[in-house]
Image (cartoon, rainbow, N blue to C red; front, side):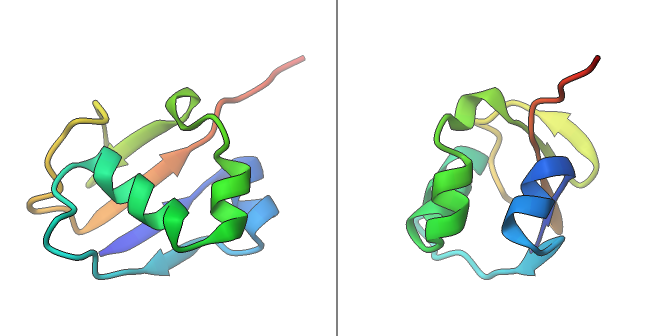
Length: 83
C-alpha cells in the first residue's frame, strides 16, 4: 500500500510517500495512521493532532473509520491555511 503525504506534511517529513504493509490487526484508516505514527517519530510529531487531517483511500476523501480493505493508495492531507 502506498501512503502519500501532501503540502507541509510532505515538506516536514522530507518525503512524498512510503510503501507499507500494515499488520493484520490494522483494519481501519484510523488504525493505519496510529500504526504509522507508532513506527515513525517524525510523522508522530507532525501529526500531533491527527483528527485535523483529512484522509483519502484510493483518491476519495473518506471518514477515519473506513476499512483499509482494497486500499492501494492512502493520502494524508494536512489542514490548509490561507491568506
